[in-house]
Image: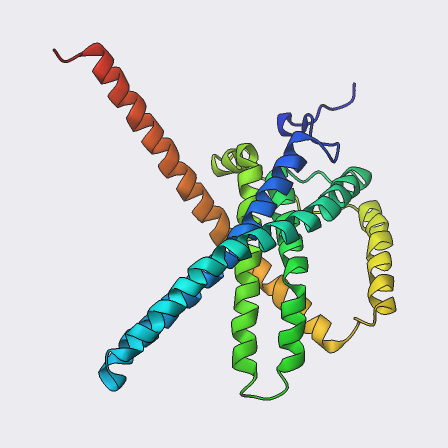
Length: 266
């Protein structure tokens, strides 16, 4: 008798299964929320800078900052739509491809690992133009610091992609938290590595034809890989903490409802 697959695998091998559809939706939503978060961070920095400038330039510095914040708030709605559409298009293209590759390679990774890797990859592709621009721009020592800020924002996008992958595979995420899943899912057999060379060769051929096999592309890819590794465990911990708080609030609400039911007030 053939070994049965884990329960989390049921109905998810097809690229349009429940998990992959849920993953694409979460990634698209994360793509819409990402520019809002970036605009929020920029607005907070601008307000802090403006209030610090009050001592040196007077109250007019704050009056100048408030209209800019209103403009940023209006732009946030437009940015959400653009980010949602951009991440959604990438999800429609690459999520089915990754699902088919996973099935073709018979990769035994659990869904939380597959979701976080997919979210990281799509976030990397979504922010690749900005990372390439920063790599081309960083030709001087003083230009390197703004490039680091761009790479940090790209790392934030990768972290949000991992959050989307975690939320799309909450069942496996919680099972791993309870110690029921111990395999990392990042191990490949010899024949799987050999089969993996085919899509890698295709990607390298496409990059060579597009003249993207250059140092800026290498720098952007290395920075993205570093960000993905650096945020892997912190993102998992934060999502689990958030889920723990939700479960605790739900249990407290149920206890309160039971107490009210058993001891009704007059």
